[in-house]
Length: 306
Image (cartoon, rainbow, N blue to C red; front, side, top):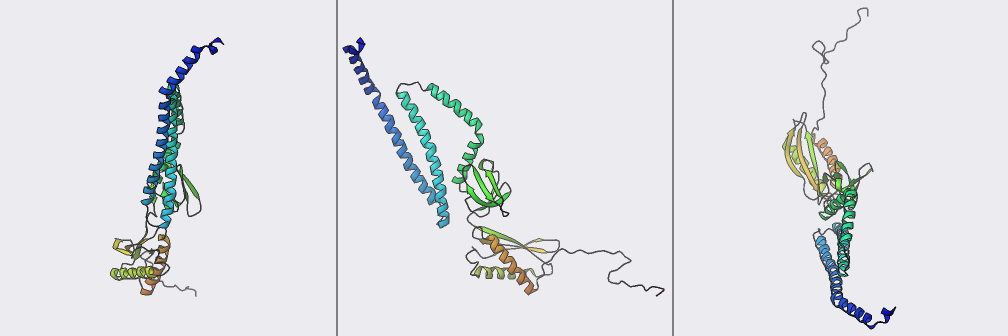
């Protein structure tokens, strides 16, 4: 108790406090200032990065909205990761500046990080794969894709999973880290490819003209003109089949419209072939009766007693 009323005690305390304020406080203020400057710089960079990502999209309004959603998701994920990292570094440096030994903290954090890394390998892998899947804009909600051989409409995308719904209504969920093959059938534009088989006796040039005429009329139709991008392409005689010659053609359409256009084209082509007398061959089967029996010369034997 006597020390509390000792003049030397207060002088020493004041001296130590003054030295601490002179030596330590400026460093702490500099650390705090640097931390807030880093946060401000992060916001500026991410704001510009978001504008760059959105500016890379087409002028289509639907694509623009989808791109803004994707950009917002990526920016939010990046912002959260950077903030956590900045806070961790700030706290460690702040404690170090206060004179605390941060070696045990670093060692403990390293052990915890190693344990989490081993226990959550799939989670980390899915997160990284999903991030680049969104960043590279490989697929988006509403696309028709095939993932690992399974096709369907994309109903949802996030960092961990991609959800598809097939034509039967079955929902398929894939981990982004386990996507080995990805085929997007509605990226920017789509196409319907036709393998049109006609009989060998038909004039190929005449058949091609009929196909072109059907394609032109379909594109001129008010119901389908906004679904078709370009006039029908005729690649020519593609192959000789067992009972038909095959002519290959293609119609480029807007995304997801290829099946509607393709079905209508097939219907109109069948009607045009029927009107022009073009034969669409189908498999035939010939039955051989042997040498003694001819199906065209059968004779009925009368009953001898008749």
